[in-house]
Length: 422
Picture 1 (cartoon, rainbow, N blue to C red):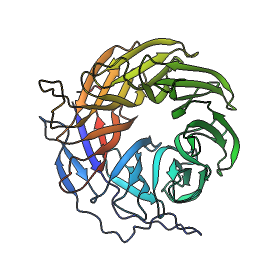
Picture 2: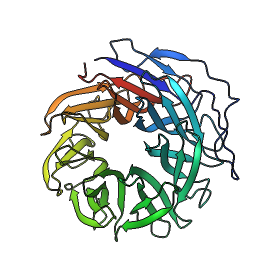
Picture 3: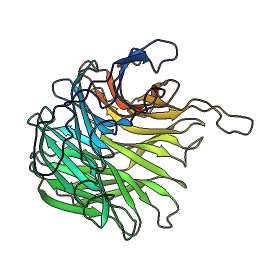
Picture 4: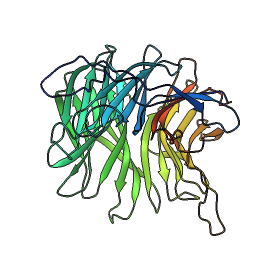
């Protein structure tokens, strides 16, 4: 397998020149760059170098954004740099993993980025949550940061209230140039989560807002555009509150529900991601306890455009396995991205492996048949949370690693794997 690996913590000098009433962007322009550390990572037989730049904090990427110029944005969190407990972190890197720019966004409490996209004008939208702004300390609000092409803030908005915990998990740009925002909202009084879908304009102003929920909890994790609307994927709690099923909701362009489907069995099934195939079929993936051989298995469901299940596949053995992202190639092959833990049983069936999580990549055909599977890991945790397809057809994965645990805590990870998986 041809693999190029880089490990990046929210690092190098940051120049933030925007000023406004409330402290916002952390100015790290006087921060001294951390010395470059090169070590071997991921492949136990081949020596593969990666670059780690960081400090003794927790730095993790939750998603990766492919830019029109062929570069990438790693979006997530850092507590190594910046103000407060934790900042939203956005790092732009080139196709070789070299840092182009690095920005932190936040104030005295915690902020984190879960989702983002490049806008039509070459800027960026980053979204997640803040408990520094909006409702205030310890009450998360959905938070969106709009930037220019260099990551400098244009505006930011919070979404929520002081009566609920709110987080944005997915955002897509509409055909009209607005943004469709998917958010979870948990009223403090009930503790039952609802799904919120809202459309905002390019200034962050709300055009309309829809809520999906009932007596049980519904949680959304992923949003995808269709020809006639949007798909919302997540999970819903059963009526007896004893299990969860994967949830798929189809809405029109104004957020009106067209249909709703659930997928699952007698135990818990959770969805992390939804993607639409060129054929119009729908892929939903996450994990399943019902169909697992071990604790829980990675699970992917393929449905037609009306939500009727065509096939489903689970991947994993006695280990714990989960899918966080799906890529679809030009020839409609499916790339599943996630993690597996290392399982080694003692005589009682307990996992006694000294190793931990590894990155898992599965390639499937359109019928769910596995073409190949790769696991990549070292002596510590490596987890891939998201991926993108590079201009050369390779797969670029982002997540986190604590491989360098002796000198720092957790670092952002960017990993490039060749298209053929060899």
